[in-house]
Image (cartoon, rainbow, N blue to C red; front, side, top):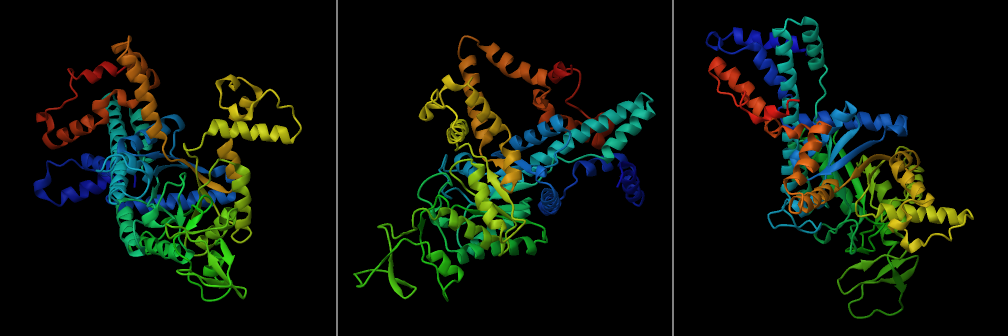
Length: 528
């Protein structure tokens, strides 16, 4: 509906109630436009359609990959989307990522926790709701500014400008974008996963990422000690999430199946198997076993190809996989997940290497041609060192002289101006584009960017403000930059909703409204 049709619609309703003569149809239309999404389910359905369309666009052309950045607070997510609209004019192909790591480290009542599913599980859907609250407020704030511009154009008698603004309102693009939300390993059994997934979806999540680790042994994907579950257990949780989506009427909701098998050398269970070659048998085939002729006290045995085998069991009561089987297990995990209800894959790797990722994806696509990945461009990787070493290795393999470089010291600032460092930086710059084309990566994300940017910017401010620069450390390093770069938060009262509140006061009380945005509001100092 257009702006004018919404005014007419509201006016028709008001006209049926004789006591509502103090309600202005245009004000109602504005409030409705500023609150386009009534529930989290409205958001989930809207954003699921966006992701589905983006996936189809990627299938047509891998240049249409998508991106997101991780968030730990609604304000952070809001500012990312405001910045994207400011710099690029559209949020198309840009999402938000909700990291379980950041919830554990920054949002738990216990204080900072490691990424081991020890934080309150309801804090994750609570953050989904918070993010969308801030994104909807960004819509209300931006539209409010457009409404004020429209009033000013009308008051100046500029009908051409007024019509231009009305068309801009009709074509308005919301800040509400898809969130890829991390449910860890499901925080319990399949029923617990289903119940929690419903909370995610009701809060607005259209895309839920779940991993194949044991829930009560869960580790960060870039740490040691990861333990996986048999495929049947993981598939049950994928189905649980799908049931949650369908129960709530978000049929286009997406599931990202994450495999940690590349770095997980342990399992807690020997998979149940009905016959040779079934999925349980294939999972067990990777176990590190030794052939036995006699049975010792407490031994657990399996039979394979007519032989009696003893899986290696650790004092922790965990079983270990054969070394070197990680990639094969990842490929099997991915195929089974996509064949049992998942929409996208996530392969957690130990380094950002297109060749490694692409080799696994090629094997997966032999079975499922349109397989697509979500990939963690993780701050846990030392990107500088990894890519300098990749260039070093490529040069050495090509017979190029690398005697001027010490491979173990390539992180050193001494190499920053070298040809090797320049080529490495170029590979980092094009990594997402190249990996989308060559390794099937549909969505690139950074899990913890604002965790690191907050620490870095705070360190810089503290060094200046508490040092010789004093107040100039804040003014020169922060406020002046906000003004020069057009950062909306320099008007922090406006960002917090002060102008929206003034608009509402005028709707409610007319000329009697006591508004905050008058001549004596110091925010006016930033008008220029």
